Amino acid sequence: MAKLFAEKVALITGASSGMGAGTAIHLASLGCKLSLTGRNSQNLDKVIQDCIKAGAKDGDILKTIADVSQEEDLKKIVDSTLNHFGKLDILINNAGILQTGSVESGSLQVFDDIMLVNVRSVYLLSQLAIPHLKKTKGNIVNVSSIAGLRSKQPVEKNVRKNLVSTL
Image (cartoon, rainbow, N blue to C red; front, side, top):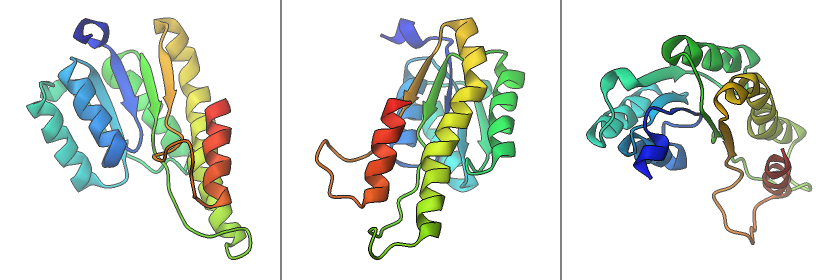
């Protein structure tokens, strides 16, 4: 399997913790070049060190501090990846937020924040990346949930999960 990922360039959002960090470390062990994005610089530095321990070379990892809720940051993520590596093979839309509440007790602002980060950013980042992924016959992986098939999450979480899965 390592041959499949050797020299491929993967852009991972939400790479500073959780599944994004784990994915980065695993892809590093397979020889992937990594464009890692997150909001927490210290956590991202730790993930980068873990990727190097897993086999990545320092020059094969690009760190970008960005907020996926900001359109300009999404453009920066793609542009910096292309400027550093010259191509993009894999986009992993992993960044997401979870704020609790139900339709009855939640606020519209919470819903808007969730939709902005968990849905709109996935749509726009995919849109920005697709022309470059077509050139490399690349792939998009959308991470829609950390839960199994039966979720007891609030409606906002379920909306995100299902909407992102259909993109």
